Length: 81
Image (cartoon, rainbow, N blue to C red):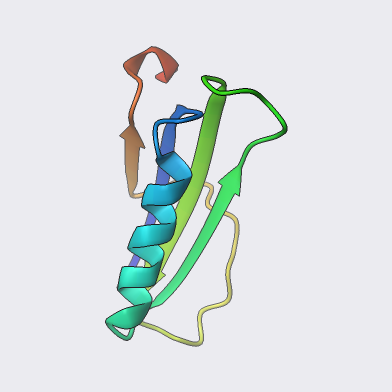
């Protein structure tokens, strides 16, 4: 099993925190997890992305997520058609 997710929101909405909490919870359950936020030195309210991969294969090496299984948007204005 391998689940790849992307989380999109605005700075201050907890996107990065949510991804890190889910990664830690997955690891505590014996799964492999990789969390990687994508943001610059923007201010609060700027768009933020975070990527989370959860796998039951501890030998999986982290790879960039190109086609996520799940996309979570905390601000619907950031959805691109």
